[in-house]
Every structure is written in C-alpha cells, then in structure tokens.
Length: 95
Image 1 (cartoon, rainbow, N blue to C red):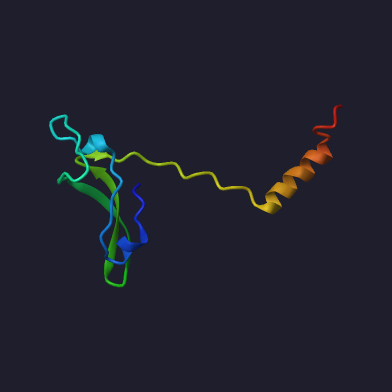
Image 2: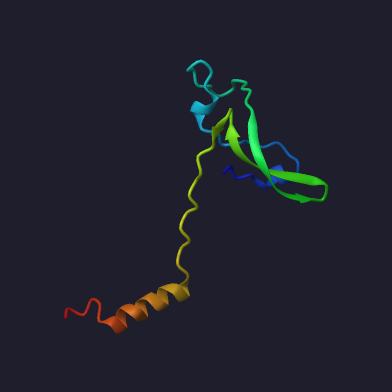
C-alpha cells in the first residue's frame, strides 16, 4: 500500500512511491524530471467531508508490493515485564 502524506488529504500536491520498474517504458526507467503516465487501480478506503480516499492496489495492471509495517518498539512496561519474567525464570543466573 502507498502511504499518503497529510498534504494529500488536504488536497495538496503529493508524491507516490511507485517501484521504478513499474514506470519503465520499453525497458528504460524514468529519471528525475521525466514526465510519466501511468494508470492506477484502487479501492475506496473511506469518504469524509465530500472527499473519497482511495488506496492504490495496482499500477499499470501490476499489483503494488505490500510493505510490512515496522515492528512497534516495546514500551517501558513491556520491557519491565520481560525483565521480571527473565528474573523469575532464572535466566542468566548460570544454573
């Protein structure tokens, strides 16, 4: 899925991170400053205040690769609980 920056939601200009090979024309990949044309297929994710938000799913008939969300960092409480679990199990005590 392509993440939409906040300015896109406000109706401003935005950039779409599209894998470069998906925009290649006759094997030539576009370079900075080149004008490109492409078709996008997507699904409606929501409607708010007279605007419809679309999540792109394909570019030029090819599915967009999905990006895995980064793992969330454990909170202080999570770290404390893991340390307590390790202490109570005898981990690292040399037994």
